[in-house]
Image (tube, rainbow, N blue to C red):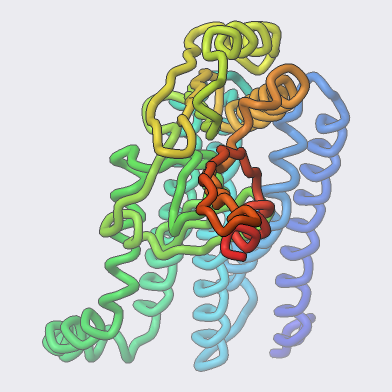
Length: 380
């Protein structure tokens, strides 16, 4: 006796109705979250829709189709092939949705971290660790999903013992081949979870000054002062000394070094430095000093120290102080600028009677490139 609906039509009807029903559910949930996302007081729904709508749609469709497959009237190898395809699709979709949900939770945690404050060291530490945790999450979920998908194949289950027996040799070969990569991964984990380096830290590497822009498990990107990007492997920071100006706090002391003449009025220079530093808004009102730190046969070395809230402010403060003090010295004490001194000996000429004339010498101050010209005159 023949059925009222043929098997192909029955299969298409069951699977089509199931897919349509799942699609309607995802459409309704999408409309609801879109309406909730319009409210500015609840930004969570907007982030939920952006992160999870697509993986949720694929997951619901795959789960619904997998649940409806026994009622579709499929038999034999075709039923096994369709069921296996749906199982693989469901595993991949669920892993995608799980990753999206975890990323959503990490986004919510990152939004509560305030890095736009003066002392943001702890906030940057948490931000760096959450960023690394996000990458670890994606890797772990992907590996678990891939393992689950591989185990759905009969060949892997049948020859599982052989695969496990050869895992030792394969592990050694893979370890040797990926030695550098694994070293970078472990170095990245060390940097993140031991708080040696954080996102937005100010560092000096390879004689270049910059900020840590990106910190991954295998490499670190440093944004240099001239907007160049210096990409270094994570092992660089565990094997090579580097300067971290914001390791314990953001506060930095800037130094201005001036090479001046020995006749420079230090007391007046110190008073002018104090005046310009105290009225500069970049100074954090904590420390400043002016000292003569060295002297040579041609000049004295004056160092001005002033503290600032962060490295960028310290750089601008140093430039302001240097520019102002040089201008003040030029306008008020031009003789304080560095100069070279030389003494020229002038020989006396004989008089007309053939007697020997006396000799005289005169001291003369020579500045800059004039030294060469006066030396030529002295040799004539």
